[in-house]
Image (cartoon, rainbow, N blue to C red):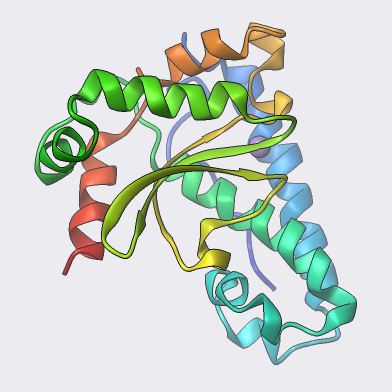
Length: 200
Ligand code: MN
């Protein structure tokens, strides 16, 4: 059984950019539901529970066919949200090696922000926009539904949840407004830590 950890901060920690009620519903209802359904899919497959959720997503071909889509969707939902919570923190300035790497790859931080925001704004329907490492190169990508970059061999560094449940209460149909606000709650220290760990 995998367990849903509490948020590593208060529900109101990201106000006013992401409101407390959205955080509470997002974590306590949506994320909990992915966790429960993921555990439900694995309950007759105890050998799979010996692997980490991330390992299961990295090798979906190793998951039995009858539960593969449940693991992809609900295991993905469980892991993606665990990751999302840890890269959120209000008012952290970008610094360190990730800053240098982003400027080298995209030309400037503003160009990176434009490209990332565009990927998040134009992703059709529910999903996620990511900054990942692909063979040690920074790359922006988006995934539909609860798909994880781990399933295509990439290393997540940063993500924004563009499912409507993540922003609709405060922003309504203004997804670009939510994306702009998101840039105030990126924990760049954590992103830098992930980047340095992946580059070892
Ligand atoms: Mn979500």
